[in-house]
Amino acid sequence: MRTNNPVLRDKTFQGLFADGERMTMNGTVAKTALLLALSLVSAFWTWNRFDAALAGGQVEAAVASITPFMWGGFLVGFVLAMVTVFKQSWAGVTAPLYAIAEGFALGGISAFFEMSYHGIVFQAVGLTFGVLAVMLVAYRAGWIRVTDKFRMGVVGATGAIALLYLVDIGLRAFTGMQGIGFIHESGALGIGFSLLVVGLAALNLVLDFDMIDQASTRGAPKYMEWYGAFALMVTLVWLYLEILRLLSKARR
Image (tube, rainbow, N blue to C red):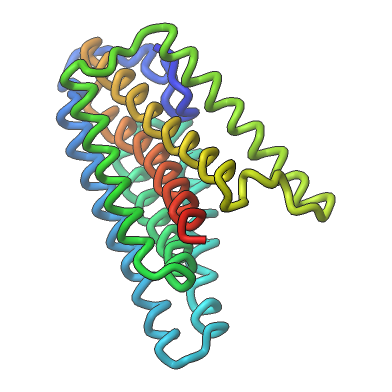
């Protein structure tokens, strides 16, 4: 029952299988849809704020108008994520708040990308929802079988990508270098790398579906639907950002 999602581990569900209303896969999917809707609403608000400021012709003013919401959203989202990880029973409250905070942050980032590449955000949103739907259908239909080798491969590859990103951040932050070239460049190697990362994010969705499905079968309590939905949101945020990066490279 291994999964690379750091907030969705096997031990998360240990000791939770008591009598009462139980967690279901369908219930988790429904709550995931609600979290996505909340994040879209807050992202749309930040987007409108940016557009209203940009209409005045002052790019710097438009950027300044959303920067606090973008960084504040990431900070609040991180704090809420940590609270949710350690207090799963609070997920019914913290997960919706997390989705709203991430929406503010993603709305700001999306506005920056849209300013440079017109239409890219709607493409990225459409592709993210499309990948989510395809992977859910593929998992439920049994087209993708989650075996031990499959889990090990996805976890190992995703861990390697995470380490690579950490090295890149360290190089850019502490040495003044431009980081690892192919992560950011728009050539064939850079686009190929982004395609690989998007694929890994999609495969992590399958691992998350499998973990939630097994927990539902074993009888986890009802509030864990919120926690499962929150965990899926973590992967979906990563997937959306990577799709944005891929599309921006293709545009360049």
